[in-house]
Length: 284
Image 1: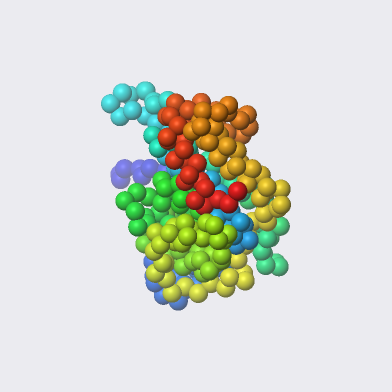
Image 2: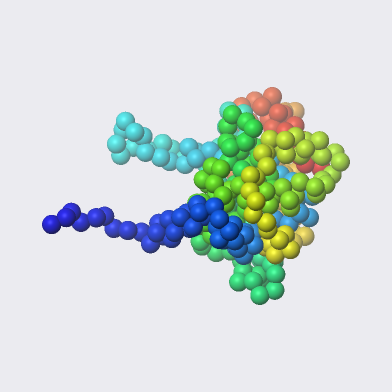
């Protein structure tokens, strides 16, 4: 009697089905990718990008900031360090802050769309369009790229896993579409040079999938949403400047407790460098 096979996860089967269909590299696979991006991908609008090209310019992704098992010490875990500063002074995040960027924003899409007017609940994942870039490290570990608006898209979870396949057809199509959406959109002249340098780090997508930009879905970013994001950046700059200049700190507000207590320990030079970095892509 053959040994019983382990249980099968239905989500894994769905992922395998998508992978098999997309790897055919024929007209049917191109059509599937087009439908996926037009029907279910949600982006921030170019109008937000022109005002706020980098949404969290002091934040980097670092999965190690959350507790994880220590290989040589069974039963032990590292402490939770989410929100604490890295050695360079940037706030460490496990992608929680990126996920939170969509907040409770409604989705705007073509008439008849399944998600037009809805908010995204469980089953959607915040994805980075570019993973490997023209840097030694991954895009999400660079504060310029981690929350760069063109590098962010929300996808259903099983499709999101396909976008993580380096050089895969979904990832390459998303790169192409992102450049078509944002690259020609101008930002404030005071930060345009820095934004151009960010684009130089991002290779174009090698895809022949044609997507109708008029069929895409966008987060409906309200005036209050934009003002909140601007105030969060300004508060972080004020905090860094206070450390650098030896001035009283502003009230913590929504700054992470670990960041608020940890960044001053790194000294004024580190804080000054973070503030200067934020100003490169942010017009006060």
